[in-house]
Picture 1 (cartoon, helix red, strand yellow):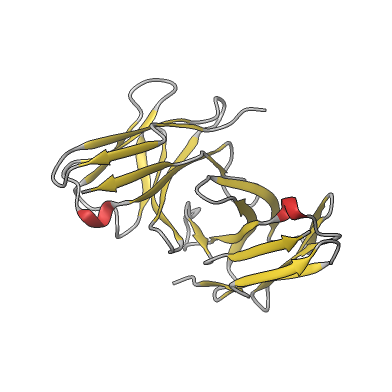
Picture 2 (cartoon, one colour):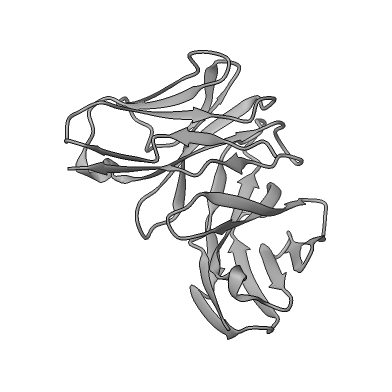
Length: 116
Length: 115
């Protein structure tokens, strides 16, 4: 059974700092990994999708890496801003036998606060 | 930009009552999902739906739950007899593809409170 873990659970940084959020998963048989942003009481906004064959993806100030063999992904946020304050979730889509598994398995998230 | 929409945004119900949560997936998407998030816990998969049938369901999705695509645009989750522990945020998601290239897009959620 796939398990996804994110550390740290919470992170507080001053504005302008570069930071790294970590995600680990127990089963390396995955199709892809997705990073989401969740604002309090709101839905999930997809930030980046990394396919299993890719090593990294970039979108603006965000860069996500994937090391499938070690079961790890990182989300790097450059030059953080107060508007980046949110909970960041990673989720993996596992390969299940001969079928294309549907479900995303989520981590518990990292709550990021960027202080002005 | 197309987005997944959900109604209602909030619902309060009495234990034992039936509730129907509604979702309008992105129009050209073929795969539909429900997830839930109990306050302070992880987002959990409930069910996936494709070609008018359930393609996968979790152990949470018992006989009290059902899903339906009643027309070409709506996708619903019904809870037949709600329990206190069904209180959660319910998210609908949709995707155009499955597998390696799949991105699931989530709606804003329905917050369900069972009293």
